Length: 446
Image (tube, rainbow, N blue to C red; front, side):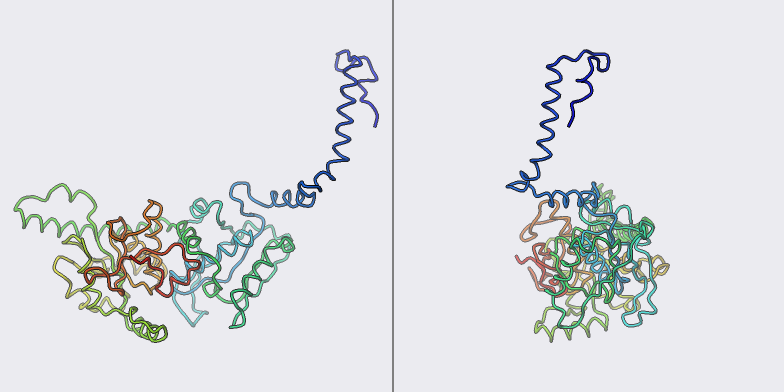
């Protein structure tokens, strides 16, 4: 290795270089030479292995600098089907699978219609027609990521991952398969496409808190959110009228300024339709329990016995359309409780404009925003609303609703609680899987 040319000539960039300067440059060159020769062996002894350095470097190139999720590798899943909340669980499970594989989930197709067996009659609907795409990525930044098919470079083939099925396909085998596909040997594939059964039927490997994190990022598109707000406004408007009449009757004077505040309401997810009663009776027999099915009378009595519930108050009944013609669901309630449903509110026209999935999304939002929510702990719809409300309370530092008045309280009418009312309901966020949601065992006991 020769000396720099500046030491061979008396002038360099117009400056005289003396022998001391040349010696200094020579020492620098020698130091650089020794660093190149000796550094690899140093790293291999008690330091960072060179192969690890290469791995770290390659990982840093493949990870998005903002959120740690690779945007150049994707996961594709089958169309997501069945009811709204089954679809939300399936979507979250797909997101968490993509997270485990360190990939971006390609925006899946949801199902606007509800056909359990006639798959060919399902009406696909794009995720971003129901939930806000950009908002999801912003809220879940650093946790999971959604991508569009337009993001694909199509430079490599697609690897199809066949999901196992049957009794022999255990949770352990499923987890081993996912771990295998998270290895670097599959990084050559831009897209891994999972084929087979609906994601809702996949084995569950994630804790409740991870699902809750994904659910938090699901924000309805403005059109649907505004429709839900119309229904909520109508409920509060009716509540304001009955409270105004009550105060006038009691005092003989104009209502006070408290009516300027949003008037509270109760939302009850009333599961008494025939197909549900058949299902829950079979479930009670299979699980050998008696606290799943609730009659109309039992629901009305327990809601009326909620401790501290101030009346008069509107009770919004989220019921199946088949019950809208049954006027008996509006009679027999405790004095001071005014039951209404979408038809009595004259908002059924809002729902009829949309397919099943959107109708359910509107009702979910109306129940989620209620000041008090009462549902069935064995219903997925009720359970996810309770989970959503628990997550809100957790964010505020509330870990238990036992013995205290909390914001966003939830109750399970199928379980007997204080003063013959419904049982207070906060989701156990420490559960290791979402399985407890399906079996009503995710309630924190007082």
